[in-house]
Length: 354
Ligand SMILES: Cc1cc2nc3c(=O)[nH]c(=O)nc-3n(C[C@H](O)[C@H](O)[C@H](O)COP(=O)(O)OP(=O)(O)OC[C@H]3O[C@@H](n4cnc5c(N)ncnc54)[C@H](O)[C@@H]3O)c2cc1C
Image (tube, rainbow, N blue to C red):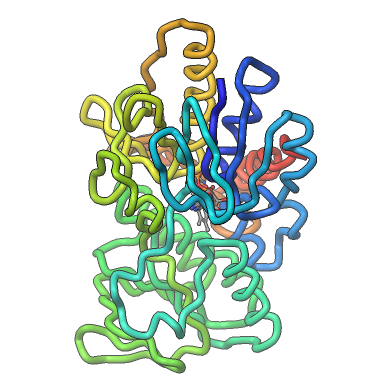
């Protein structure tokens, strides 16, 4: 059975790794030459992780797994063919694993911000930190990426770090207990926390707020929100809020599956989080279901582990502490032990592909 995997990030690459060797013939459509581990971008930004720790080259991985790598962007689906920039890839089944893009919500002055949503952007941000020694850094958005970046920068730089959040607490999608613990840890590291603060424009040297006030800054990093890519937006598949809506088999329709950040996965009233943890589980599950399909066996339903109402996450708060969250429970105080565990999990993930 020919399977086209569109996107070779956490979900796409893991699916191929788990399903091989086996009855499936994979073509991976991925414009990059390497698999990249986003969870380690904040550490790279802070100068703690090295480039080789967060990437693995696709060439040896594809050779080992017998996968054809089409190093192009997928543009659209036409029947059972993926139309790419130069090639056309026919498939029996396709898996869409194209991740998510940074969402700027139409804010003015985005050209004056840095992002750490892709490795290229994170490298650009790191170069700016090294070359320009910014003294006042504003991080907009206090989700996982925002709090992780703020902690690591506060720890590694002699600069004033601000975290700016439109809602009333940091990590607004987590429990109030988790937010309180993380706010305490951030404050201890000297991070200035501005909650209930709406950014309306980013200028070269300052951030303008909705209440008419402004704050000077040397570097603005935008981490507030993601959106579906243009490729996903243009697909003629069922959607929810722009994401690909899948059923309990992670299938958008007939022979087309969607996993990871690109998918809207809502099962029995629970909505899967857009995290590496979930993407990895979608990948394993879909790999097994594709093998079942190839062998003429029935597919199995997916069970969500981390949902918006029951978060499961390890949150790095600098290079010496992290917080573990399972549902409403927040594991202990920030400890080095949890940090080491998170760092080990993230680095081991990428090592599997080497
Ligand atoms: C800074 C940061 C820190 C994070 N930290 C954590 C964390 O600590 N823990 C956690 O669980 N999650 C974390 N996440 C979230 C996690 O990284 C994502 O949920 C996960 O990577 C999603 O996997 P994916 O396979 O859906 O997408 P990705 O891993 O983003 O992969 C998508 C791939 O698709 C490719 N692609 C895009 N468009 C096309 C196209 N048109 N054609 C072909 N290929 C295409 C891209 O090049 C990319 O390689 C973090 C995210 C960021 C940005």
